Amino acid sequence: MGQTARAAYEELLTRYAESCDLSGASALLSWDQETLMPPRGAEARAKQLATLAGIQHERWSAPQVGELLQECESDSGEFNDEEAAATREMRREYDMSTRLPASLVQEFAAATSAALQVWREAREASDFTRFVPSLQKLIDLSKRKAEAYGYEEAPLDALLDLYERGATTSAIRTLFGELKGKLQALTARVLDKGDAVSPALLQSDFDEDRQGELGVDVIRQMGFNFDAGRVDLSTHPFCTTPGAGDTRLTRRFLKEDLRPGLFGVIHEAGHGLYEQGMPEKWVRHPLGTATSLGVHESQSRLWENIVARSLPFWEYFLPALQKYFPAQYRDATPEAVYQAVNHVEASFIRVEADELTYNLHVILRFEIESEIFSGQLDVADIPARWNRGMKDFLGITPPDDAQGCLQDIHWAMGGFGYFPTYTLGNLYSAQLFQCAQQALPDLDHEFRQGKFDSLREWLRTEVHQKGRMLEPVALIKSATKAEPTPEPFLRYVEEKMDEVYGLSTS
Ligand code: ZN
Image 1 (cartoon, rainbow, N blue to C red):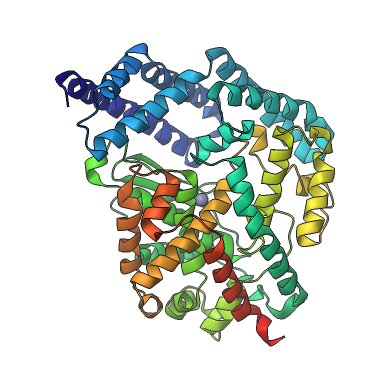
Image 2 (image 1 turned 180 degrees about the vertical axis):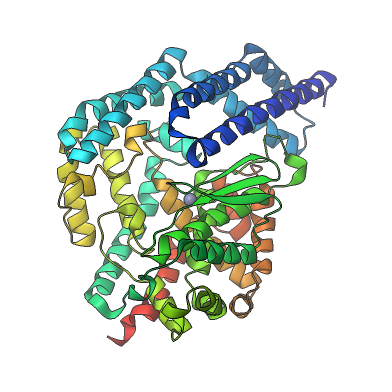
């Protein structure tokens, strides 16, 4: 490596580390906003966050950063893999922050904050027509964003790439197309069984402190490190890492249902293990972060669904459940809990959907987004399109738009292209777990004894320790020796439904 390229690279790393400090400070302010801040702090906090974001953007989009990147790239012949990958990531972030004109960024920020307000009112009144002008405006601005970022085939590609880089409309359409027909058929067979499985065992009166202690027991056993993390309450659960050694989860409880509190915190701890598993050498470094939202979600779903909704898991954890809630679980069996946590139901709300039907909710949103961005669907026709999709996929029709196309915040925030990452996460999780099982044939036996370390270490080696070295598809290929495919998920969910609902014996 030439002297100037080496010096330029080192200078970029220094600037990048400062950029990480600024985003870490923003993350901490946001965490505080969601957990501890009193309501009247909101206005000042919004300004603080905007100021920090502005400083960070200004510093990283400065012309000198572009020049330093060019120096690296013009003489990168002797860069090793790590340096080449770090340069690639810094280039990507630089391009992302310089391609949008400042006027468009401001217009978009103003439009989303106005749209959020209108969306809340429209959802409250369950009146989609009220939301149409704001949504139309965000779609128009998003199309301009797509043009500014650039794309090869479809404008939506540019937006998908923001959340899952490399993702394209056509690749996702193929993947989801294979998934859709089989999921629909399986869902129909399960729903045919009607009330064969009931969630009643999880619906009672559960003291919230005890729910909290149970959740902490479970995630400690999973390996979440409380010397490098904590758990607090918030309305919408999330996971954030303001800095190395500081990964924070949040959760919420429902007194009458064990599921949101317990599976919610397991989900967030799955994200947390990914963050805690980043290599120490990449602290404040371009490679020391998750490679994509889809891969992040694969970690949370793997623990939440594949591990914590398995029979061996409940063979181990039933005594803990009985310790905290003796009245409810004194006579319960692991099999009964296993059945109840895998109950399937056709429901209107995505975030409440079970493991089987969840992906159909996502596929519907992706289909609508791609029809809108290709000009096949008018904004005003979204409710009819939505309801037709729900009828087709799940056999139900939302009674109103609040329980239909107005339920999610994503579009009101201009987050078109975000939804597919949820289903990609589910598909990746099954593909990764299948490989982990092949490498570690005793996993079921270990889970029954409360041992989760060999699975966690496998994920650490194959996924967490890679940071952003590999892009998402390359990471899945390196860990599983195969292209992303829906097959492992379909096989997994079919086997489970067969076991829980006794499909083959019908
Ligand atoms: Zn998640």
